[in-house]
Image (cartoon, rainbow, N blue to C red; front, side):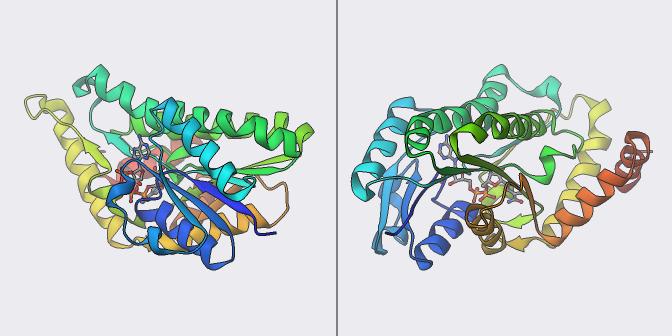
Length: 272
Ligand SMILES: NC(=O)c1ccc[n+]([C@@H]2O[C@H](COP(=O)([O-])OP(=O)(O)OC[C@H]3O[C@@H](n4cnc5c(N)ncnc54)[C@H](OP(=O)(O)O)[C@@H]3O)[C@@H](O)[C@H]2O)c1
């Protein structure tokens, strides 16, 4: 029997590429998104259910999970992909911006996961893939909010992997580097206040570095392949880097102490 995967944020980028890859590999796909009415590509594919799910709307989570189980009999894997990046000096960020970032990237992920846990536990089977980032293990300046959420995803996932062991459910974390999606477009929530002059050199340094990094971005299909491996390899491996830049950055982080690594970031961004 074909297996079924539920993906959040399947309207674009990594989520959409993952939906397409699993569908091509014979899976049933519950492709969830905030505005399914706008979707044209996934709706035409066999064995794909396109349905509304906003990770900040609990009723939509319950409805989408129920509809997925109803349509395909069971759900075997979950990809918590929905997310975006709030950046900028913390002093400038409104509490609304702070709450929205954590509500989406952290609370939303927890709520979708909780919605599927009873099903996975009853089946004694299931794989949860949480999309973190190299930014879940390395922090850049002006990313206190985004990195706060992705470091949270890492801790949540690592802790959860222990408690899931007794249920037969596996937890995986995928850590992409720079990926060519709309992350730098509509998913980049940047705020600044130029009158706060102390922060402007770091704003400049970050923008220059991000432009360079994103110029080398890998395609979303690469992350989809890594997610496919994480879901299907049957191992207890927790973390999967996605992209050559991710592997290189994570290796550099692991081999250096805080002072050396952070000194390198400061030098790269011209902050010394
Ligand atoms: N691109 C990168 O370089 C990169 C690197 C590391 C990690 N990531 C992570 O990869 C994930 C996907 O991002 P992407 O790069 O594929 O960017 P993207 O193309 O902009 O996709 C972001 C997705 O998240 C969805 N989303 C945002 N808020 C949501 C909510 N409240 N409920 C449901 N869906 C919501 C968006 O839906 P709408 O269409 O409704 O806006 C969209 O489908 C994110 O978690 C991001 O942090 C990306």
